[in-house]
Image (tube, rainbow, N blue to C red; front, side):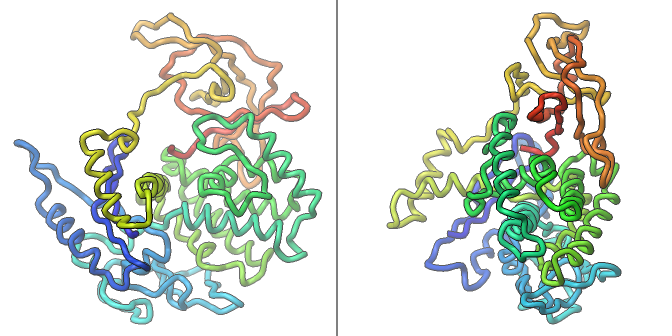
Length: 447
């Protein structure tokens, strides 16, 4: 089944199916998009009439993984010599198709794509050319597939199963597994999954690779991964932490791009020419996409993958699967149930591990008890344990405070009433084995 899904980017984000196609294999042509393109074009040009209001509609992005993106754009696949849909670079064969150029890359534009200036990149004419959109910027790199399931998974497999020069010992693998399992008690309920052992890496989901990339990897790899490999990983981790945060990307987008360029260059030195496969190469274009949309989560496939899971649950047997899904969707129109997105409601929890926050002055706190006290403006106050003597947890490749990672001494704290509205940034509090130094990591991505 190949569904065409749409998300309306108003909180809470609502995902719904526009078209459903079903067959014994993936579509052999792009005819299944014709109705969608025609209706979408009409909406983009004329808007939607709702009662006496005319609502103007814009197309924010078209989110696909790399194979589907190449298919709907009618271009060569990522494994082809001209497979990058962001730049005109020709690939080089090193046991696999790689992209060796890093500097002075010629980027594609909407005009050059529509005019098919580089004929080797195209396989035909995409139906999306009928829409008044930028065919390069409107197809962002999906960091769920290419950074989390792609680059992060590739690095982990290199470390535990790769060449002898970069493979870590079994003892270090066991150390990392132990640390990951210990982290389970510190991960808040915001995360759908708790950390799992590397022994189960073949069953890890995209959210688990994201969790490792943005948060847990910084802690569990230190001391177990070779120093130069760890420093290389940290450049990727810090860059992605910046790019998933709408606040950080406004200030540090250029720095994140520099880190990703260094990550790709240094990766070739550490892991060889064959390391620069398409997913790794796409990191060079990631900062530009994130800057254009405001953050990586705005143009990621996570909400669509969640909806696909719900669609799969609607199929009870292998007979007439499409009819089953359509009937379930019609039934849910009057009784949305679990298909209806949950409304956002800020709830302050006073139980570990869900009670840690970072305040605007870079101090950290734990919510201890709810209070009936309110300030002059009616804001509820929360009794908190505040840690204002925060230190940097690391200084390479940058001061960790930039991305909201702190080290505190839990013995030095005081109690204070804090307005509920000031508890904005949730965080993860990880206690060391000795209990003397504790790490605080701001939760940066959107759920």
